[in-house]
Structure formats: structure tokens, C-alpha cells
Image (cartoon, rainbow, N blue to C red; front, side):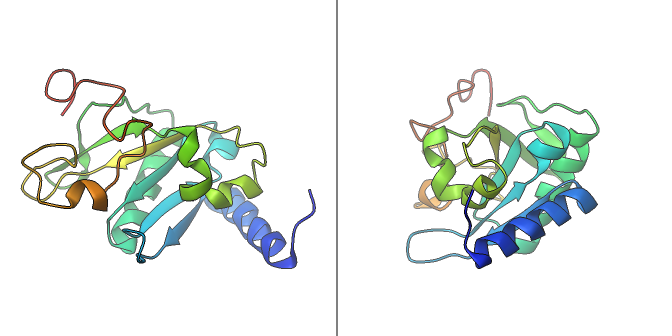
Length: 167
């Protein structure tokens, strides 16, 4: 794999962070295309657990959430898509969805520096509004579904049925 000096430096940093902390967190700021987001790189390599991506949270909160996920998953805890988890943020549930591979390049691009073939698993950590509305619900604020885009092929939950077997 022939990398530019900038990509080689990033790859070295990702590897160093992965060895030291079990993963690195890459943050991407909000832009004209959409909300800011953050994702892990190295969890798959280090622990064999899915990389995680979270959209629309402030970078500091996204980093804390991803670090908690990787720590717990790396210790053996498994997270079921569609199940609510109330112990990441006080009183605010989160759930998980599998990321469609078609989104990997756009939302997990730096991970390809460690996995050039894209042969890693990824999950999205999804968070409701403070009022408890999920991005796919009609009751969600206007634009929330675009702000926290669901990274499935359909753009809707695919690992569960909303309101039936998941939130």
C-alpha cells in the first residue's frame, strides 16, 4: 500500500492510539453537507469488535460515547441493534444499528488506512432528542432525521421493527 506522507502519518497515529487506548477517535466537523460526526478506528483490529460511528453530537460527547462503547465491547459486552441501553448517558437511551457498507468510505474513511479492503464491521450509535424522539419517528423535530442520518441502506432501522422489536 503506497500512502502519501500525510496518510502515512495518520495511519501511524491510528496505530499508536489503537495500541495505547484500543482505538482512536476521529472527529469530522459539521459542514454544508451535514452534521458533524465521530467514529472509532482500531476497535476491530484490537478487539474484533465493530467500529462505531455517531452523528450529530458535539465532538466531546461523541468521543466519550465512542470510548465507552469500545471499552465495554472490548471487555466482551455485546450490543444488540434495536435494544435500548440506558447506561451510556444519564437517563438518555442509545441504540445501535449496523452500518451499510455503502457508507463506509464516506463516514469511516480513515479506517481504510488500517483495513484497505474495508473488511471490518461497523455500528452506528443512535441517540434520540432530549424529548425522546428518534430520527425515524414522525414526531421527531423537522430535520432531525437528516441531522442524525441513519446509515443503513434504506435510511431506516433494518435490524429491528421500530415500535415493535426496538425503539
